[in-house]
Image 1 (tube, rainbow, N blue to C red):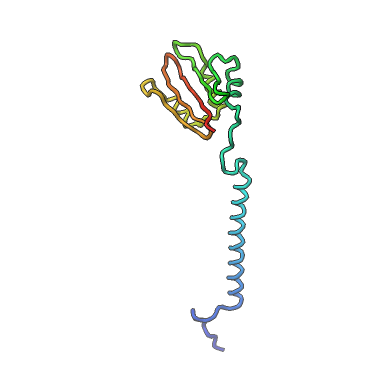
Image 2 (image 1 turned 135 degrees about the horizontal axis):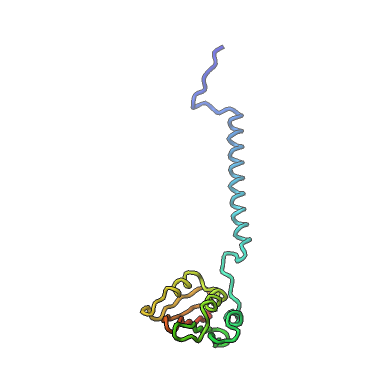
Length: 154
């Protein structure tokens, strides 16, 4: 007749225990699934998380693609160094702006370094930058253009 109210100190019913156990199992399974998916995503990344090593002949290929006649570029040190002479307002010899952009793209120069190159002023003097496997130094004068040296470091 009288039902006793369950107090907070009473044992939970069997169905409540099963519900909790099921929630824990499902939650744990979901957490394991997320960990497995994260590990698979890292493992399937093409570079495996590390930058891909540039080909040994990258600077020579860059010259061939962007300045086939070698009118504004020179490869030295067995292909480890590429000198680039960009045409300026008065000194019209060298690679054009389009050729320079091609060289920067082919040599895999990062955007932040490209931006630094294109914002260099005569008063800045010699500037430099590095990215995996390479370093570069350059100067800029509007009359002479951008003079750039890219050197393979790895």
